[in-house]
Length: 105
Image 1 (tube, rainbow, N blue to C red):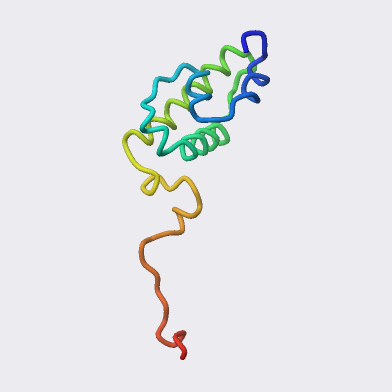
Image 2 (cartoon, one colour):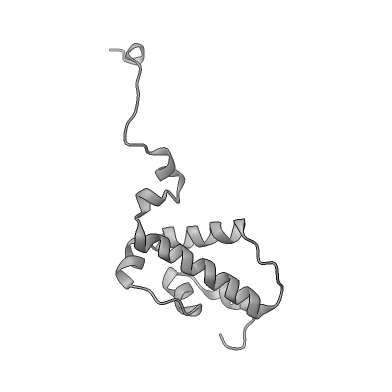
């Protein structure tokens, strides 16, 4: 991947471990094993909300690395249910209300 542009190299990455290795972010395999999709989604969300202001590849690489580090760190301090990255976790509140009038035989 040394002769690829940043964008080309990123297209080749497929797993959380690939991204973390590519950007040189140290990680604990046990954390990634449990949270890989959550880490990648949080990374995507961070980038969507914080576009890189510079076009230079070195600046973009540093920008991406910073937000990948943050995404990974979120799941070293917390868990997927608490972080609510995916809609299924945002909707799940642990309780549900069904009005008595809605119960029929």
